Amino acid sequence: MKIVSWNVNGIRARIDHIVAWIEENQPDVLALQETKVVDELFPHEPFEAMSYVVETFGQKSYNGVANITKNPSEHTNKGITGFDDPQTRVLSTTHDGIRVVNVYVPNGQAVGTEKFLYKLEWLNHLKIMLDNDLKEYPKMVVLGDFNIAPSDEDIHDPDEWKDKILCSDQERSALEEILSLGFHDSFRLFEKGSGFHSWWDYRAAAYRRGLGLRIDLLLASDELKSACNKGYIDEKPRALEIPSDHTPVVIEIS
Image: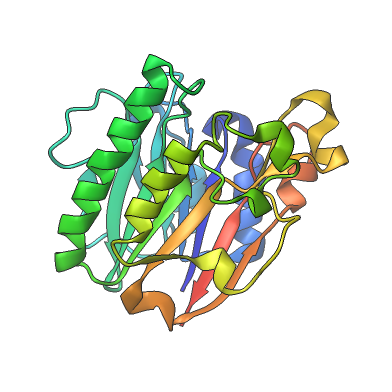
């Protein structure tokens, strides 16, 4: 099963890129973030024309997540269970016994701000939900735009980003708490070292200059670790005309 995460930064602006990528790569599950559209206006037709099933959880102009899948979900949940959040950031679906939890973690703005504290609170509520859900779904992949670089190896210039948003000790500790439930950063099962990124700012020619961060993650549960046989980042869509600032990240599970 090929499971993919991609923050598309606007589904309608990127629809041609997404459709072309699906046609070429044939994912079983494609989890999108920042769709930026209400459910009623989500463009189902191009995906359904390729025999994909669409599940959405969106809002106008901001946030929004969607799961594009070859098979219908056996059980769908929107949002974080037990957390009253007005923002559309989490969509959970189940396919062939694997629970797929698509997350768009808040950016946090800057360390120490109200939005930063909200990010930490949000991550704690996500952890509580995942801890409970693992009991029912031991085979689970939590994937999406985490807006956290797990380590300095995931940053083009650790000194420049030290203690800044996306790279602070507090954010990394919150991510470690989720990992401690029994999850593994699947990309790091296959690739070690620095130089791997999934997001590049639109400014300062960041992509061309290699100034990126790896903040898009696929976390595989203990039950799936041994079944993971390939993990990679596909940079090609970032080089297209009018791209998303993120690119697809992939895990293949046997």
